[in-house]
Image (cartoon, rainbow, N blue to C red; front, top):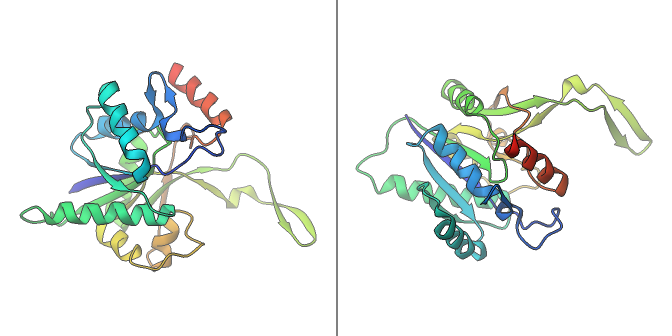
Length: 231
């Protein structure tokens, strides 16, 4: 089986309150995105890595790789208008690369991961790929620990948090399942890859995620990330 990871990094840092896109913010001497790339390379150095970046960020990324010395091999695909379009662009690049070979392996799995989640545990990645082997689609989730309330026209009401799960990445799929899903037209309800795949008619299984696998999107997340790296 051949494994590929699409690492999507299209953020512009608006919630971080800085002009520097959040994936490029340095922690421990490296941008967040480089830490994420290295996490997957450590997990499986044979996995193919595709970084999906806005075109206007690519020259800066290449400069960072040269200055810092990123030695993780990867391809770069152009980011799109939305995350959906970015993932579709990454899949198109992957399809082209697969077509250059003498023949594609029958078993191909593709994970899609947020570029600003550098703390994913290797055991979680393993579990996602193993479940995708069985079912064709798997996502990591963690229980919701906060109390939740639903808002409607009459006000807010408590809901049973045991019925809800917080979704993480990588979200891993059989290649054919993901290609079919991303052939659909874009819809506003597509908030992640699982929602795209489910809309195509394929069910999605869940596996336990790791709580440290945070998405770094605001200054508080950055402080947590710095503490995790220091640890």
